[in-house]
Amino acid sequence: MRRTLDKMGIQVDFDNKTVTSYGNFQFLEQFKTIIGLQEILAVYISLTKGQNSIFPVQQLLDLQLDALIFGLSRFTHLNALKSDPGYLMQKVSR
Image (cartoon, rainbow, N blue to C red; front, side, top):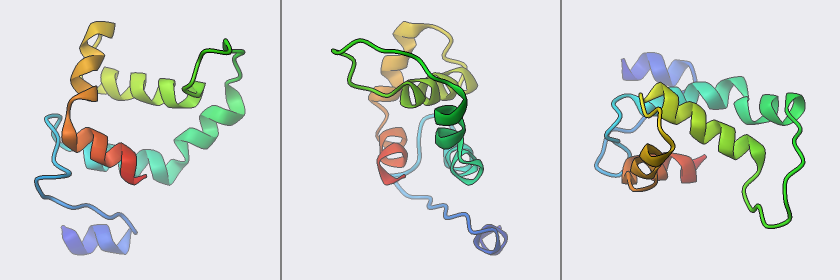
């Protein structure tokens, strides 16, 4: 499996820093990077935000997509993502 992923240019590590509570998140994150999800969202979605808003719309939508894929359908459950070290590591390493 490792050789196949390497041939595709997908870097996946299985260690205590990158494994999340949400299974194969690394593959999802790599897929989103390969298709350029952030760029797609930036091109096709434009929202005016308030001055006190510090996160770009693309980043918020990416978080919401992750949450929905993981089965976290309520806003209060998003805190689970903010406290998952593997999830945060994947987001920082992009």
